[in-house]
Amino acid sequence: MHHRLTPIEAARFGKSIEDYRLFWMEDPTPAENQECFRLIRQHTVTPIAVGEVFNSIWDCKQLIEEQLIDYIRTTITHAGGITGDASDRRFCPRFIRYAPARTGRPICLQSAWRPALHFDLWVPNFGVQEYMGYSEQMLEVFPHSWTFDNGYMHPGEKPGWASS
Image (cartoon, rainbow, N blue to C red):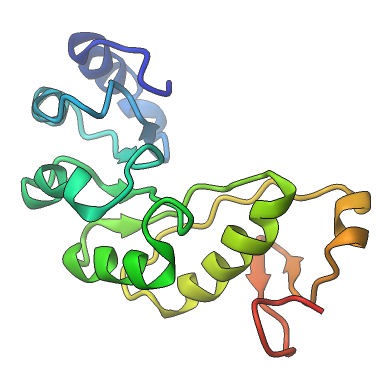
């Protein structure tokens, strides 16, 4: 969806898909107008995920305090690094799950995704990690010790951010 629906459209869509038990509606409406999420929440039980456009916890404070979202999707690179993201997670109650957005650019493999994997293992309100894989060429350039097996990521045994 990525911010394309009006609040009414998002509420209607969320209601219409409830029988399918969608994992979440991601960024159903522009995140700047957080009042919109109240309307969406009132009309659907479909989980709502938002946060890729947020740079700090203060960008989504109202959404968290009013329980207007189910998943917060900030990225380590946008949320002030591991320290900033850790502060953000401590602010979130346990019922709002952390589901970091995947960053697919090669430099983000090093600076965001690998630290996110370790962060996921620590954060008490972890929900799900977005992962779409990387090409063999990229993995040759960025050696790694992590593995993906049967739907689970393992950071490997080597020290550091699962880098070789």
